[in-house]
Image (cartoon, rainbow, N blue to C red; front, side, top):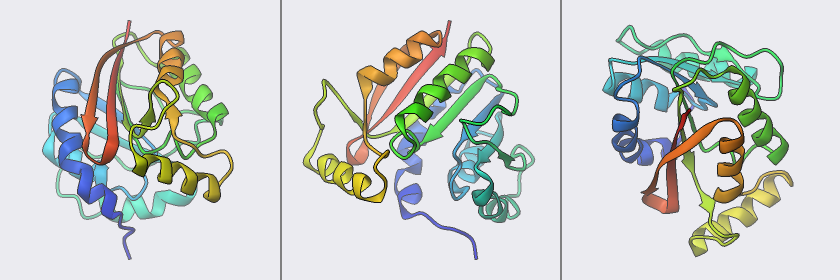
Length: 195
């Protein structure tokens, strides 16, 4: 049975609307943390000019494959293993997308993610990150405050990240923020370009 995320169904169209202009001039995307694989299939189908490369930790790859096996197009690649803290990474293409990952991984892993992109991503790389963020150390909504408490109960290293801390990591890796898009359900889509 294919894995399924209702959140992926709910947010795919708003994310697509923000991704289209950001990814208009690139030809290939590495998705970090593809989860169920739903986003990969949907975004690849809606942006056929892109070659979409899903990736995730090993235990999630069979579920992603079950979605990709039913995909009719030819621009969606088989998923590859990627743990951001491990030394072996796939090639980083013109763009990177990740959704709902930074608040799941511990902050040292977030730091490693940006450090590796600083090393491996080409100049001009487009980086798009979707998820909840705090601003000025404050929650943007009561629901995000409750979600952060829930995250802490799931794992002590999980937490909504501060936008300022993440942007500082991005700048240290050579990225400049282009847009900060407000999204439904108190999420954001952040778009950087490596200069």
